[in-house]
Image (cartoon, rainbow, N blue to C red):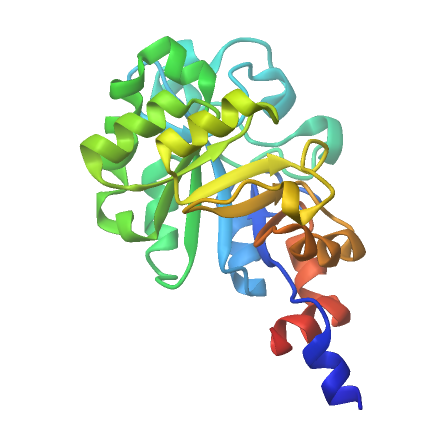
Length: 260
């Protein structure tokens, strides 16, 4: 009876480490991704900005105040100047991670190369795309990740940057939906990405309302195991979480994953 029930239970979604393990360690850092990978994460997500001299680094905001505790713009600092900042997230962690460096994309590529079965969703942030131009940013990221490109999926809210990346470099892409609309459905069908990402707040509650296409659906950000387990019934394959370690260790999620 228990075996039959397990087989009939909805499958568990595949979990994505959103910015590493930001619930426990500073986001977009090597220590965060290393912790996620050591815990068994098969998918990770990271954010990319460019420095003033065009070097891709892991950083979510264009402004440096939230992550590094100092005012200013990351985009106007050279890599050497960015190296003087820290990814400490002082409002959350205080002084605990005051020496945590901001990693370059090259350093992340070296880390992920040691985990060849892992997929990295690399988000191109709109601030850098607007400041440096789509081709310049896409080319810089692809060049940096050339050695691990088979593990990489470029994602962005900017569908034109993704179209360029797909046509020019042949990489896998994932579009992050800015909103749920008929116009964006048409844009998704024209782009035909391998993945579509949606905020859970705008995702339809009914499976039949979710758009069908050549893509897999990913939803963000979910830290409640019960909410994560409900999403496959709505057509979602992957779930981004800030609590990847706790989610991977959740017994119900783990049991569903084994029988999925």
